[in-house]
Every structure is written in C-alpha cells, then in structure tokens.
Amino acid sequence: MPKTVVSTYQRRRARNIALAIFFFIVGVIGVLVPIMPQVPFFVMSLLFLSLVSRRVHRSVRRFLRRHPKIEATYHLWRHRRRRKRRGRIQKKKTRSASV
Image (cartoon, rainbow, N blue to C red; front, side, top):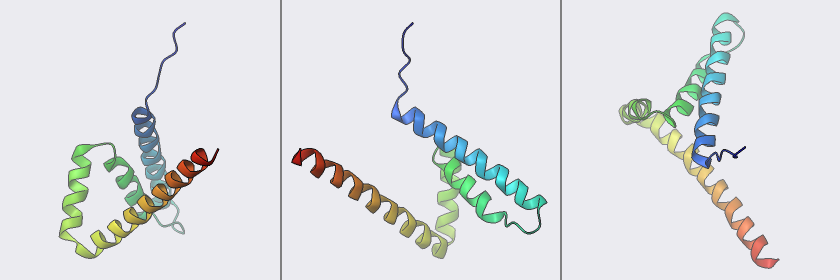
C-alpha cells in the first residue's frame, strides 16, 4: 500500500481551516453565552481564514487599509511572530552546526 505524502503546505492549510472553524464555533458560543466575548473569536477566525482564501485575504487587506490604527497593530503582531520564527530557525542552525 503506497504512502500518501502530505506536503507542509497542505498541513498548514488544513490547520488554518481547522483553527478558523474552531474560533468561529467559539464565537457562536460567545453569542449564546452573555458572559463570554465573541468579537475576538470571530476576528481570529477571519484571520486564519484569510491565510487560506485569497478573497478573504483581499477583504482583510482592504479593511486594514481603511483603518490605519488596526493595521499598525496587526503589522506589529505579524512582525513579532516573524522575529520569533527566525530566532527558532537560527537556534536550530547553530545546534546542527555545533554537532
């Protein structure tokens, strides 16, 4: 029986769709339960969905251009995440070079 090879892209795409659905469901629960906030969960759902769908990505980009304060916060968040990822990559490279 041949092994199916799942690429990293397909895994990321599946993970992003799963997270978008999860946050959407939690947002719906937030609408039903008055104590729990729903807006942050819907926003997270939208952001994860924008990583998968070009149409949603364009809409999010258009929204961010219209709201510069939110755009600045979003870019700071993305920049911090990239810095963390680069740091992890550098650590892995130095570990493998020292071995």
